[in-house]
Image (cartoon, rainbow, N blue to C red):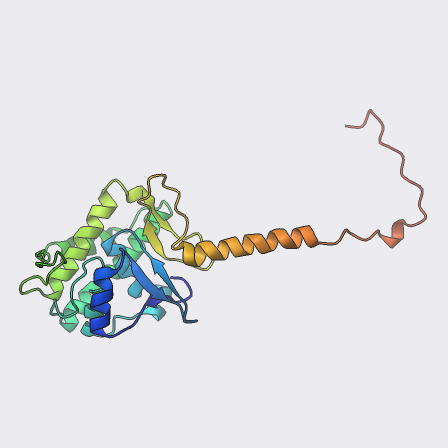
Amino acid sequence: MTDGAVPAAGNTATRNQAARNAPPGLLLTTPGGSRFHFDPGALCLELLTTGGPGPYARYEVLHRPADLAAWLPPSRLRLPADAVRISPAELAGTRALRDALWRLAAARAHGRPGEPADYAVLNRAAEHPPLVPRIAPDGTAAAPPTADGAQLTSTLARDAIALLTGPYADRIRECAGHDCRLIFVDTSRPGRRRWCSMERCGNLHKVRALRARRESQEAPPAAPDPADSGRAPADPPSESMG
């Protein structure tokens, strides 16, 4: 997370319309009110912006089933908020999957193996049938038939398994910002992505680097040491000195 960034709020109709027109990724809002676009590169990693285990629990936004439903329109699923019926138990299952994925993705980003218990969480969630994809006449994603929260969680788990076992598994990274822990998969051709967003951490890095260069260039020369005043210059070292 970066300073507690959370998905931008808004009413359901506004979110649904914005989702249809927006590029892949999420619009996050910091505690200070600034917004920036974050594309983690995978559906399952978008879920990590809703909270997480341990220190990320303070960023939790999935308190009720309606909160998870509100995440659907801006996510890569591009589904209406009422497309999936989510029970409190199914919400708990999605949160458990998210927390396990947080640990696995962070471990992979730092070259560490994940815990078997977390892989087991993904496998159990993926055992359920996933959401059935459908397309509307206007070419946008349509609501799946008779969908429930277990199907949503299965879809997310299968996406996570595909990512962790696929060709981009070694490109899962943590933002290089010093106060940011957002995780993304670098799908760019050169594979050199460092930041969650150039609008956010990339720009902050540039500002800090520019400030540091200016300060080093404007630093006054060091004043002579008063203790050295009046002393004769020291003899040069002998050529025999190593």
